[in-house]
Image (cartoon, rainbow, N blue to C red; front, side, top):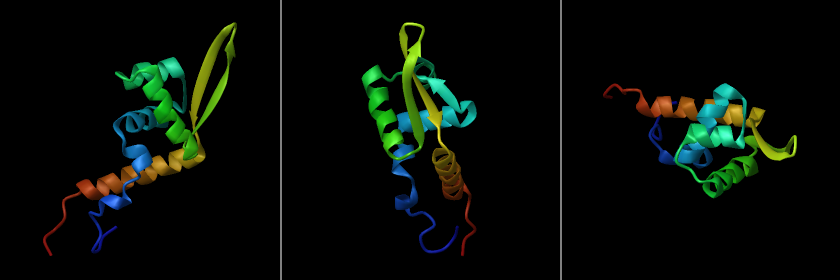
Length: 106
């Protein structure tokens, strides 16, 4: 992507770009799915409430699916990266690569 707007910050996906959401998307892009506690451990530093808020934003965007159920008698929340989420992640990475690629002087 080149042209007059090649460094336009408005082209960055704000849903993904937040630090906690970026970490979650990065982990899920490789894992595909994770339970809440696994995701919390991998992201590190987020409280349950904070992680839940960020998950809701990703879910509202259609980037993840959140399924609540039970394993035995214990509640379990499973988060899965959706097709739309994978496509958004790939587009995000491509856009960031464009930002970081050195440009020749014109």
